[in-house]
Amino acid sequence: MTERWKTLSLAVLVVISIAAGWVVYHETRVPQNEAEVNERVFELQKEHRYAKAVQVCQAWMTDPRYDSSEDVFFFHQIAITYFIKAYERPAFRNESIQASANNLEKSLEAFDKRKTQGIQLDVYEIGRVYEELGKLTSQSNARAAYIRQLPMIEGESYTAYGHTTRLPPVWAEIARHLDSVKLDLSQARCPTEAENQ
Image (cartoon, rainbow, N blue to C red; front, top):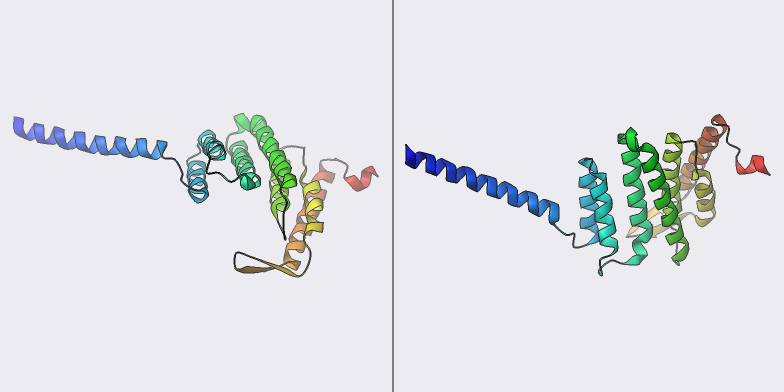
């Protein structure tokens, strides 16, 4: 009987050690590239671990392997993480909305510093998050972001990463979002730029 308990105890100890090792690896692994960072952030968002997701982005942004031309994307990613937190955790809503808006501003600043070639839809994506933030609060910069994006979309199509995208549907999408934001602002009785002039 004693030998059986020793074997069982040893088996339980091995299982616990393996599980503990996996948890330590899972929590302390350092992403080796941007794809791994995105994967880890998405994983943490699904686990509702928003502070850790932000920490992973910020740690990558200080890593010597990090390419600062990706600032727009990573500040945007942090803003999305805070937006999800604002939606999921009402007790932290105001603080999370402010943090999301601050990171959207940083993303716009990084976009302005970057010398872009060809068509970029970064400002549109930033506008989408502003639009969603506007649904959680009365403040919204979505309209300005969409208006800013429109002149950047020229031509009938653009090709990136081996894929050609037709632009008329992109214009229609931006116009649809502009109308939606204008309606939201008018319902909230916030004057639009046209009404201020």
